[in-house]
Image (cartoon, rainbow, N blue to C red; front, side, top):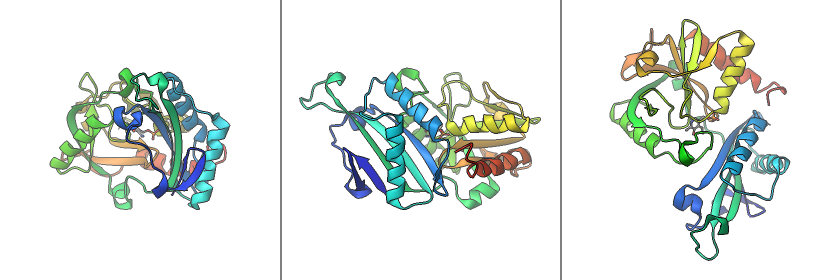
Length: 286
Ligand code: PMP
């Protein structure tokens, strides 16, 4: 992979930051990840929107505008030589030259990198569906409970993952403050019931893949809403799937050891998965 750091393109192994950087010490950072498939970015504009909104809310400034960042990301991918890549842009508060505790003294640091794409779900899991456990850990959205700021804070999600592993599952979903389902380590969740889709509205990252599912549903004439999803409602679904940039649409066929419906990947999920990958070749969507 290739990284961009301090104005230079470097091999990943040479891209290093100080341990005094507030991104490391305080998780004082924001980031976004984009997927490149067949040499083409997917929904880059939406990822840049979310990244620049996060910078603004965190009062970070970088010496690049949207077009500059897009160019840097394209360059990282081109230099890395990968046709399928996982691309990340990030900005940390940085470090203050005088070790001041005043964040205004810190020099914000923009970085980017492109690494070969590795999907979070393998081919077998995509075929049979993921086995998920629901942990009782509660998602604390980062940055004063503003879930729209994408941040590395994952303590709740990682603890949820260990709960899931302890129970023989492959990944986890954790809860919102009201005990409803929130999200998982790096993905949003959808429930399909009687042909209608719902996905948690509160306390979750507004995922770009989640948004893409809404867009696909609009094209397909499917009803999709953002609304509370209780644990019981999720388990009683006809179909469940999770969504992320790193994995696309991924079916879930088992929750807490029990099958969802007949335990097979459902027809709505299969249809959306196929459409999702088709759109990667559609210039209107990339
Ligand atoms: N929730 C969390 C906590 C995440 O970290 C991610 C991905 N980084 C998502 C949801 C999925 O968002 P997206 O579809 O934009 O990748």
